[in-house]
Length: 259
Length: 287
Image (cartoon, rainbow over all chains, first blue to last red; front, side):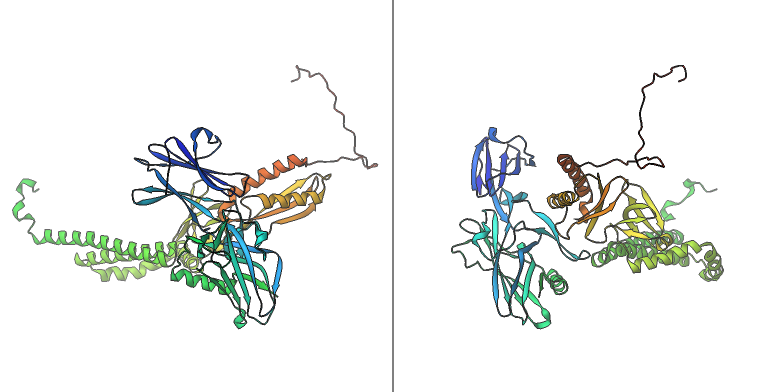
């Protein structure tokens, strides 16, 4: 929790996202915009007169406005479609680890008594929409601006971005080719790293039996960096949802693989 | 005539006649309330497990059956002879059958519609040129609310006989735009610009890929088909934004969107006829 000072406005910078947070006696207001610099991550209290005039504010009214606030990271609510820049083949018995990055959602919360009140959620990077699956039945997803990569260094992840290791294990007798993959960020645990965020790994296993593919979302922290701090727990799924997901995965396929 | 002053109010409430009426009144009130509660509860259960219109149907069915049972019970309690009523019902059925042909046709069509489920409550449908949101699906008719907030009732028979388009059936849709540019424009450049516009628009889906087609050589322009996929709730946002973006981009690139043109030639020559306009003073007296 942070505390705002008298006649001050909080400016939080995370990647290109700028969040402005202001308090009056009976209200709180926040606004956001995107800047140029990508690698920023700081919070400062600034005088009111430096706030840009073009901002559009979201207000919340209180009988007596609280003083404490917090910024929390949240996972994207919709799935993301991960693509590689070109189809990549994995021979039988081999495995490949890809790294995909996606932005995090920032939630602005206020501490009202013992309760945390959610003021709003802001996507830290604008993303295009896309569709995964058939046009008659599929899933409304976010499209990632950059493809997944075998090389972690080439990703250049920013402080607002989560890097997800995706391990594809080809246990089948055929060569499988990765074209695109539907990833569910809400099923991942998110950790805070040194320069960017990390997610728990995803393991995809391609089996011969019924040409099936299993996607397993782990909760453990990735081995690529040590001393990570857990930020967001994976969302629990109810049984009925799980069954429906299982069925849809069996018939439509979360992973588009082919020879 | 008996005046109210002559009534013995001490014994009035104890008469068997009055007790009978009180009993019947209580039966009607409690019975109807009970039937109402049962119908609402059953409707909610069915709605949560199946769909809104099944819920509505079950609710109405239970209420009307319950109300009929209460009515018949009261008639029997009052000593009315129901056998006579049932005897006349046979004759009445024939007469009503002829009179209610349309209603029966609608009823049967309604059952087919409920079984077939071509749309559900809340869907946007187009019937006989009317576009609106389905408000209720009943045994005799479908009620829709048009986008300019008019209430329209379609008999179920019409719904069975006419083609019905369910606009919101699938989660994603494609918006097709016809775009015309002048003959002098570079086709490759237009195709590239349309591709960029599709990529940059906030409401157009990245996948399925947009349809960008050099469609035909029109009378006055080169004609392109530009189809953008979108999530069904974003129709208005996409239409507003993409049309503005096309106009802005074409203006910026100096691309001409032509008006219809007509070239008139003489019969012996392929050259266009020259047309000259002369400025003549207007004769005010004639006008």
